[in-house]
Image (tube, rainbow, N blue to C red; front, side, top):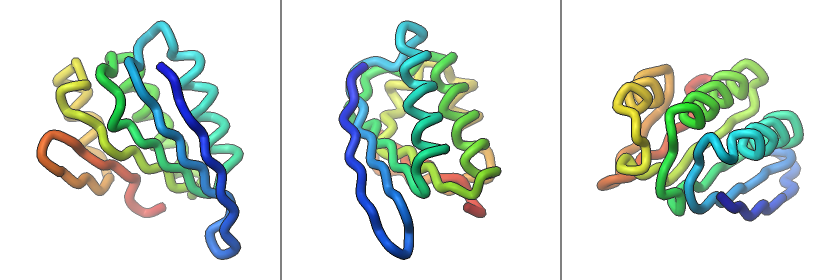
Length: 119
């Protein structure tokens, strides 16, 4: 996994972070992913994670992304996951978990975009 971070300041919206992640998101880099998610939630007013370059997301990291979406909703700090390839999510149950909560999900061919409703 590697990532690029871009930070923007916007007066009405506050700090906006755009994280572009590439490669595999697996147990090998769960600590790095957790740190990035924590910085995004606590340090940004609005965070977008572009996952279109991710080739694989294991179950543990799917759970981590799910937890981050839930936490961002509690803090009223939007966290958007965009460009998730359905083929990258290896656990069928995690696909259901990511898709069936109070989230707006947009499908575009084999990719999905997720953001927590009410944030």
